[in-house]
Image 1 (cartoon, protein in one colour):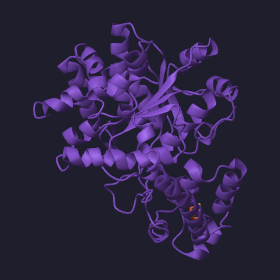
Image 2 (cartoon, protein in one colour; image 1 turned 180 degrees about the horizontal axis):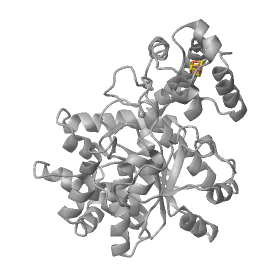
Image 3 (spheres, helix red, strand yellow; image 1 turned 60 degrees about the vertical axis):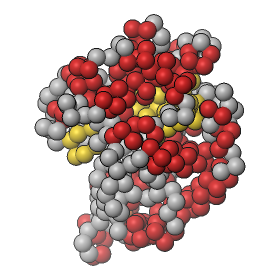
Image 4 (cartoon, protein in one colour; image 1 turned 30 degrees about the vertical axis):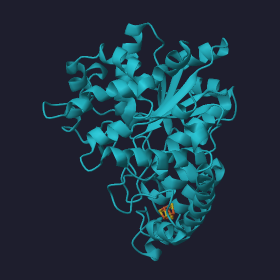
Length: 400
Ligand code: SF4
């Protein structure tokens, strides 16, 4: 199966670091930086695969995934593009050894579309494979790593953000939300097993920690590792685990995989997504860049304003655009369609074609995208309201 590859940067840059010597600090020296806490610069996703030592999702794996059901557009379009041990976990599944899913959220603010993307994909995997999902809310992490947030803030946000997770339609019988500070008695023994096997020098090498980091930050990766062994914790079963997540989270799970081997437990497999683009032209939608982000709680007026100000690949004048065409490959409006909001591949290809020929103008495109987003958000906001009545059924600590 052939996949579209519009946004992969060309390979061939010199690979400065071997996969085994990844260091967040060293990334600052290059043109982009990807850590669990910071993503900046013009990301070369192919180079990131080499740096992190992951595997590109190839045609053979795509063919195999197509055998389990319709292939999600995020896979078809190469947005879910990298993996660890997917062949192994599918072999286990084929033998009748089902896997569970684990993903999560650091609750530091409201949810935007970039957060929803890997969760939408996670729901697709849950539906396709009938997998249990453990969704970790890392209120402890956001307290430790963010000077402006108190624990009561991150805990409140965990519940706010959980409404967005539930609104996506996860199966309540197969989904449990794990708020770290409230489930710590469940997580802590496993976190200790992990912590005992991770040295300070490893966390320094992987995350770039220094003497000025607080000791909670240094310990924290053990808490993020624990749910990868959730069915060992809850049922004493060594169930395989699959983690769909943004590629920026991979460093945590490299440590988790190393520790799993030391504990004689299955290494979690991973599926990595690229970053959801910002409206202002960056590689990642970021809450810290005003106007680059569409929140799930935005009103139609706010959406219209943000899309109206979005970075496009259009020309300065209408005449120029009619004559020379636009550049969909750099256009945030086109990228939004590409990533989530135009599921029909032919319609998408036609949009790119008409843009390049100057047959469509940015104003029309922005209007059409605004209408799609408003419709999507209206449905999401309605389900988010209903989620308030369901939230307790999803919480792990209330159902143990
Ligand atoms: Fe982007 Fe549409 Fe303008 Fe082309 S016409 S640059 S796709 S907004």
